[in-house]
Length: 564
Image (cartoon, rainbow, N blue to C red; front, top):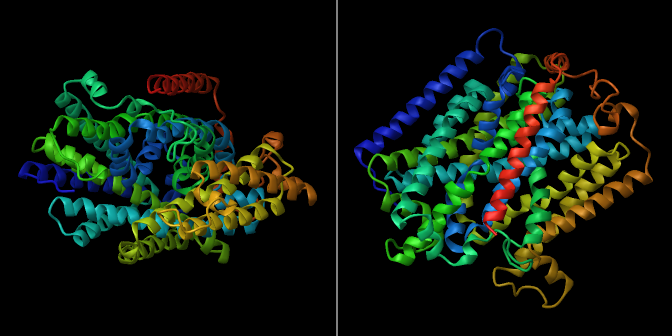
């Protein structure tokens, strides 16, 4: 990746950083008005509107795998990879209509806290530990690394670039909390979409239009529905496996769900989720299609790709004029910084709320906020410290480490999804499911490593080899079914959960009163929950949201129909 920038480009990038600091400064100043509290720092006072919630959901999600990976895969195989983005739109509807009402009404700060209300403290500690470790080893270090790579491409040394990304993002996250994260995300969404869209439009124009694009590349490049035996994106795995991973990521991961917890009420949280669903239709056009454009231009001899992952940077360096390159680089940095600030804030919330507060339940509001700030700094240092080790890890092993997230997703998705719909499942079933799922997923990871990239490390024709080589989406389906079976079986063989563990927190008990709030709950959180119950969902909001949902479903159907 090598981008030569002019003075105008640097001016645009400098202006971008000034605007980021300005927005973050305003959000921080707003945060500091009045007495500082944990609900203000970690959840922006639970007073955020739907537009900001939706924009932050989208911006937080966009990371290096989107900026480079989607375009690279588009250049090598076409639009099928866009299925994950389209599926995300549907899962966001689940978040808004199925999960959000219980999350917001419960007044929880974190997803592990919700698991404790529904099941037990053991389930809470499991999810908190898995999330924190995963954030440090993958999300934080990967995003810092990607930031260093982007700066290296524009002539700044890797470590200088990494420190700039960490420094700028860390400062406003530490000082302003979630409010600073949300409003910088809002600004960065426009920069990100604007930069990526310019690459798409200029690339298609250079080719001679959409018709020229479709006639230059193989027809399979515009087919989202690949055969069931496709090694990467089988339609069976996309249709049944991707939603399982999506439920975990979009509906149960603190990194994402924390945005909806900051909403004014259920209506704003739900509409923000729907709005994010519309935004998630864009990556097919602004990230995947540029990769297809790069492939088409290479076929015409207009540019040369040494590797498919070079698609986006080569397009930017070849097609975009001075000035516009700066906008695109600012968009790259916007995506990385929004993801990094979100994971900083979410991880510090988990450390503070699910570790420190559990160990010291009488901590003051001021102590909680300062623990959140200090933990953000510590997490930043840990992320930086992990980068040298990550650089020494083979590409194959690193891919496997990333894929393990897909293996821990099914058990977590099972305990959340079944736990909301069926009151009979209990803590014994949940904990057994989480631990069993972790062991089974870990076994798959070990077998993959033993089998190796050439797939010759295990005895051919055996069930062990089959487990190691089955498509990861198909494995997710299998693991989810096994986890549901374990959850149901263990729950039925043990005592039913006490009424207070399910009251108001499952669909069968939604009208039975308070959502299982314990007596030790943080007063600020409980006050917010009580205030929430006073803002009842209006018929007008629901009517509009229903029509918006129908519109999103039609948009997904139209995409599937066109790219088939």
